Image 1 (tube, helix red, strand yellow):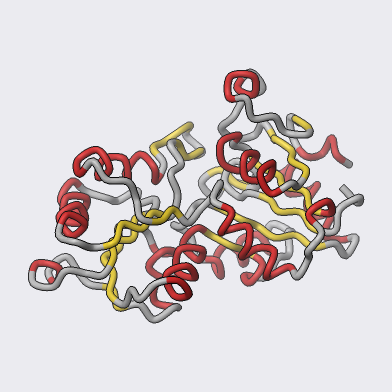
Image 2 (cartoon, one colour):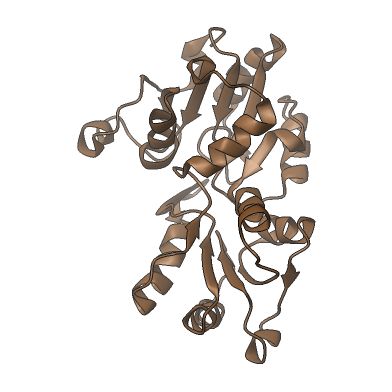
Length: 261
């Protein structure tokens, strides 16, 4: 691990499972940080607040600044602010996504307001309290011309009780209903989110970057595509037998990160 200047690590399935710590991985990452090297967390989960996650991880002994945490919600907000003229949004998502929309001064419309005013965009992320009516309202907005922004297309989400539906599963209901693909997908494996991470870290040499994740089709695919080294850790979604099926090959596969130290 010390051969690298920057580690980009996933959160769900690597550091925590629905808030419950994965201690072996936390220990290994803490040892890396203690050497003075840079750690940036890049998560497709748009649901949590970066500030609250930073506090939780600091409590667990992994000291990381909120500015070194990048969620797909932050990635979506940055893209919308820099690359579009979107001003008003309807959010299908949790606290973290709403927080990022507010941070970048987007006007969030309520379910009542969109009955009379179509938002510039529908922004969809992981939403464990989503309802049929909420998804249907977003679908109608998109059908009426709103941009369709999705934080990520993860099929699954690793919880403490096992696998649950990911944001991609929710987005797929609208994709299927309208036969329309999202206008933008902010999270991994889209290179946009890694460009944000590299900008924050101020590290240019990708040969000095290590990407750690638990999902082949997001974390490892993204790392491979940008030319970084990749490690699949088997504490989340993907299993060793999935590597051959997917054709996505990490540099290394480990049961947990303690084997790296």
